[in-house]
Image (cartoon, rainbow, N blue to C red):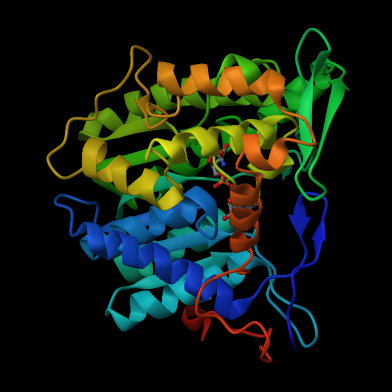
Length: 397
Ligand code: NAI
């Protein structure tokens, strides 16, 4: 079939297999061009490995350090007449590239919040790797079914305590409008923490540890975000921020457990970037469009792969010191949060309107990057030729 993007609000419901493969290859090429890194983990489990920060966290140890990787994700395979989700095609392409290098790469497609996927993962580690020396936790999900109670929690993106009014952008239509979001109820806050907080990360580490598949000295990393005043009410002080505080507190508890064998749990505060998860948050895409404009102009722009390459090259491997902040977190948002960058974004914020959006912000860059997430707009891909939407995962055969 000829595959074209079908954007519905903040999602694209189609994905291009060759385009996703080209996107993955670009990230591999970037890592290769940066060169090998010393002391990378050698057997890495990535939970949420198919897109965004998790995919980058799979690519860096594999292609800068020859690591074996086991990826867990929740993606839809393609079928006759219907494309797979982008993360599926990304994972097919990643596995092919890793296998071509002689690297171990296996994937488990299913609900990471469930006991059965945790069990399948443990069995795969036991059978193929013995132990893992790093666990990257990079899930972003709108819901979670609790494995003990069977209750399904939904996360919400709302302010806490008071309503919040701000500018936002419809990235598809290019319209800048004002929105007011009513505050979350106590239940909505608790449910968001249940989905995006640290409980599931802790369950993973406990299950892996009890099964004896965590190597002594194992490292685990989860990703979080803080951001500036502009998004404070909807992000850091909102429902998602409560979940991130819980995730960060979980890191301290996990560190106590892992430090017995010399291991450690980290939270890395990453940069705001266009991913499937971030495009769903009100107000944030307008902030990202302005941020990209400012950071690109100063040559400081990074995508997921640049961020995660820097995480390992300058904080977690390569003989580098982690340099945590006063709360023990790694700060890859250091360039985003620089005073000069934030001052410039804050000065643009009150000026931006539908009319000047194309010049004041990098909405064009935002849109192009959004489409690339689904494999559209990649150089060297002929979008006019037929593609086969059915692509099996090499490790499944
Ligand atoms: P993403 O949407 O690109 O990736 C989410 C991943 O989770 C995918 O691999 C998906 O398959 C997987 N997933 C979702 N539900 C699942 C389930 N039930 N079972 C198994 N896998 C499941 O998201 P992104 O943006 O890379 O987010 C990853 C982490 O990074 C999140 O914790 C997010 O809060 C954090 N982060 C994101 C930032 C951003 O601007 N995008 C900034 C800083 C942190």
